[in-house]
Image 1 (cartoon, rainbow, N blue to C red):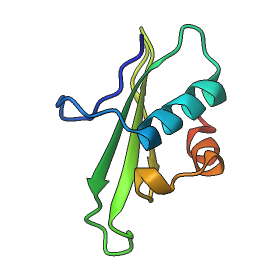
Image 2: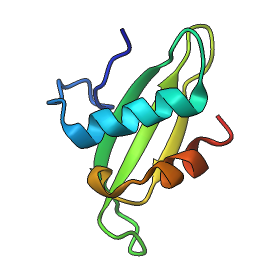
Image 3: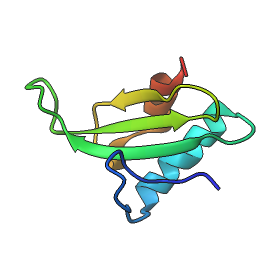
Length: 89
């Protein structure tokens, strides 16, 4: 089963927003087998950022890890935001 975590390897409590974004990512990427995802919220150091941003790492066996960044907190991400962020992965 694909994991949900963060880039620092700490166990992250599963929450509805994280689960929703992960489920959308699976549907958007439509890959078999389903990739492993790491979904993390971090404080953005860029003054143009609104504060928290979400980083999604997509890991497929035998391939380099790919990353997508959405400049919104996890709870504010829409399916459209995610589609735009993942369109080239």
